[in-house]
Length: 287
Image (tube, rainbow, N blue to C red; front, top):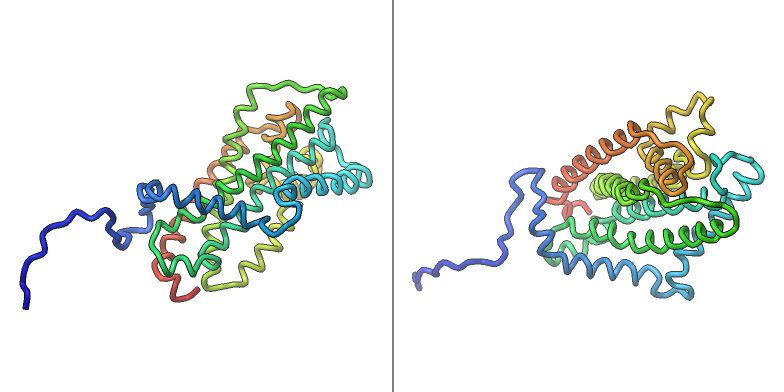
């Protein structure tokens, strides 16, 4: 028997079980950033690879939804838009909501949709949900550009507005939306490995969630309503209202509401990462 001692060797990567549930391995995530951007490219290209209009659907969807809201909530229900041009009011809310809904829906399928990849090769599992958040930023950028073009059009047609210091809040509001979607998506993704009902439930929750968020109406419309507190408990409500205020200088801006949304984001992200790390250890046995 050959008893020759193997000399010490410095390995590039050592795969070890996580010592605790809070081990994020962010250094490993950074090392695999190239892989992350490959996933970003894959998600963006694959989504419309076999469609005729391709990325134009990013523009068609918010335009059609805005026109539908304009007809139903603007013309038929005649709900106030806090002095904001109705098309801009609806489009701004839809733009931010679409980003949240896409991030939440795609992140929630991390384990189930990528089980074949996870079972073949090692990489930090957080790379995939993070790639979803980044790839949807491209869609958000396209729709936000459409919103800016609409604002410029109305500006030269009598609806004047000025760029204020509140525009600096917009990146932070988008970050908060991404954080909430990321945390909730990790939780749902972890639960879906055992209970597939959550994927069906999520579809209904996203559809109904739009109406529990001030997308088609402002918070001021609920001023005298007994159920206003329910809408205010929605952490997205303050973010949507602050987004509109930052863009148009009209509407509701409440610092306390934003602090509540920020606290909710931190809690849901921590819980999401903890649950994700726990399920990651043995999800291949149940998925």
